[in-house]
Image 1: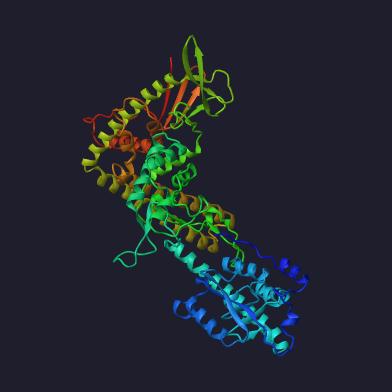
Image 2: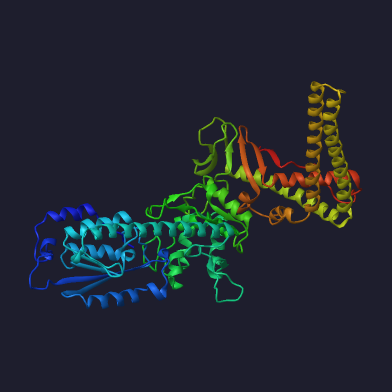
Length: 597
């Protein structure tokens, strides 16, 4: 929607122009003669939700009827135009219908403005006063506010000069009060997890209050759009660039988010595409916005931008800590693991393959130089009719280079070995899961916790008795302080031990359960053939290349892997599980070192 700026300074400058028949000076308006002056009137109507208007009392229809009835009683006033700002706040004057009215006033087509009351004209004390007391008189415009009994052509004296500013001040204060209340209410809703946006993010739709069990402030999955969101994340994980994803969506004829909302009959506009275009195409930026949106994980994030106050509409970005973030408020479309993986990919250098202009090389952003820690870049070399591809340090560190096919082969072998170990680990965990070991382990740890708590109580009692001993003269003040410090330290050690034991209990309970979903990531590739981009980014955290073709391969989920290994070792010391293959236990680290020869 186009906003034009109305400068009161420009309007004041026009006052120096000599009066014309199309724009008579105010002096001629008040000349007493037998003839009735004719006025070209304009009805100005405004309604705003921010003003708390109700349809049945402050509707545009009722305003029009009231003003037309009043205009019929005014001699010489002919209504030539009606300007309506429906749904626009009175806090500022950047309203389309008001701007249009001022343009026609300057053109001499209108010289009388009628409003229901001053609040319909505006709720900004300063701006309203400028127009009513300066701009309109200089332009020879008659101003009429029906309910307030104000008519600039029939001033009753200095009392009108006091009443109008006073009414404007009250209106401005009311607008400020309403703004504060609305801001507070919206912030409360955001913190509660209610969706307060005008339109749901692509892939979701708002709940329908007319349906039983649905809430308009909750997001529901919009299946057709959600399927597109899933494809976008899938393609990104498969190695396609954002631009390639956008081209693919356009080729398939899938409507862009804006076009989709238009097809749904929503009155949606955005600054990211041509306003009003139902044929808006997918772009790389639109794909990036979807890939970075945390809403798809089931987390509702709102309140990212704000305005300084109800008069200044220029938005600013709020600090991340001030955002309203509530987890689990709607059904996720993308699991948190895939979302976090995509964020890692977006942060890395992912150059597009020049061959097809779409795919990303398997090791883009993954390989690092072992000498300086910077990215390795892909270089091609031609010799004797053959093409060789190398990964070299971007800073050209001497000796930090490796053939791409040799790197791929080493990573493939290391991954296969690591996956085999994880499969063995999984079998051991499943075997342990079937034994009555968890209950025994938890009971033992609970006994240790009870003993530590008894220690804490004993130290607390000793600290209490120290003061009595000092008062009785058994110990002096220096001895009191020394012994109190020692007992407090022992108390803190016992408390720390209890926290550690509780973590062990949690780990035992979760071993083999939901927390081991990471194993499924590796099991998915247990019989893989060739390396793919998705496989590398899903299972490998980083590849470090050292001189002499030496590699350090760092796998993902290192903490989870080592936690399970520690658990299996602990159980193995207490119970006989020798009948189960334990090749995973201690057989491999989460960092594999290979030498390519």
